[in-house]
Image 1 (cartoon, protein in one colour):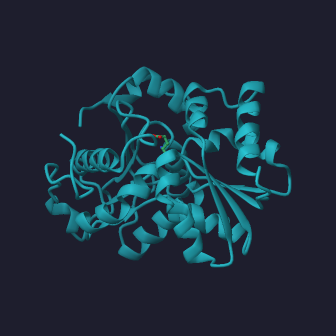
Image 2 (cartoon, rainbow, N blue to C red):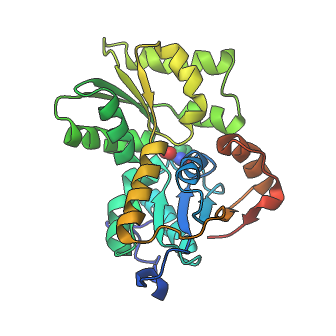
Length: 294
Ligand code: DGL
């Protein structure tokens, strides 16, 4: 059933709903998806920046990880997740997954226009370049994100003088999913990745957490990297771009009460709640999460 040629498979059709292009979209939710719970770090930042917005989050836990899959599979998953979120009448789509952003952002932007579609790679690159202009950036990401060179291109476009090294760190996804984000096991795995990345003499001024799971390991990564290294992620910059985009479209929520949060997962809602609570910074129960099929 693999797709040949085109990255977005023709079999998966996305139907635009009528309200997508309507003018009174302020009360509609923002749709956010990730391969699992990692994108909740982005959701958290969006919620802090825009507390009155309704949010629908989809974690494709049945097919996690995306980072080791082929671009064709990742694109198919991203398209199916988008189609599911469209059923919620979303006014904007945030791809809160670096791997899916690296593979599918441009195609989804084209397919979904005029619905705004935002990824997390450019916001992450923007944060790093702002923190260390003209600096050396070490990007920690999944295999697929590294293979596609998404951060390398994004940083080079923003700051041609920057030096960039990309390192895939699949084991960090597992550590974050397991909740082992501190202690000697996490420390020695992080140290090994940093040593490997800098074995050729590359000296990072910034480390980009180029995977939505890695902010959970921020303290461990910062401690291993040392105080002179800026450790940045996409979450806050993405939230700021979401705010700007909705403001310029006149689509910011007009209500004064807290927005609704709907959580969807494609498998393991108890695990999603248990691990997701750590990403979100507050306890979740399985009743907070709806099981869906794509
Ligand atoms: N969410 C993915 C990312 O940000 C990491 C986990 C995965 O491989 O699915 O790249």
